[in-house]
Length: 192
Image (tube, rainbow, N blue to C red; front, top):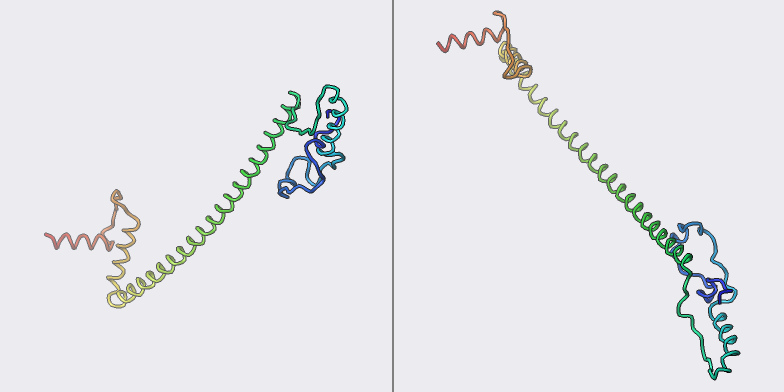
C-alpha cells in the first residue's frame, strides 16, 4: 500500500471529473493541466492486497473474503501541509468571491452615479428653462413699465441694484443728487 501513489488509492478511474471550469482555471498552478493518469486504481490495489494477504492468512485458519479502504492516514507532517493547502484554497476562493463582489458593487455604484448625473442634468436643464422664461417675462414687464414711465423704471432698477449689493450691516453714503436720496428725502417729508 505504501508503495502506491495516493492518487492511485483514492481514484479508481481516468474519467473526467465534473469541475467548474472557472475553478479549474483559477486553481493555483493547475490551470490547463490534466489530472494525473491512473495506472492501477483503488480496485486493482485492493485486489492485489487481498491476493497477497490471502496467501498468508489461511495458516491462521482465516479466510479473507474482501478488503476495503476505509481511511488513509497521513503522517503529521503531510497532514499539516494538506490542511494548510486546504485553508489557502478556501482563502483564495473567498478572496475571489470578495473581489467579484467588490467589482459588482463598483458596477452598481457606477450605474447609480450615471443615473444621478442624468437626473441632475435634466433637472438643471428644466430649471434653466424656467429661469429663462421667468427672466423673459420680467424683461417684458420692465420694458412695458419703462415705456409707460421711464423715470420710475430707472428708479426701480436702482432699488434692485441696492437690494442685490447690500445687506442689513451695509452703510450707504449717498450724495444729495442720487435718486435714492431724493426718494428717501421726499418720503421723509411726506411722513412729517
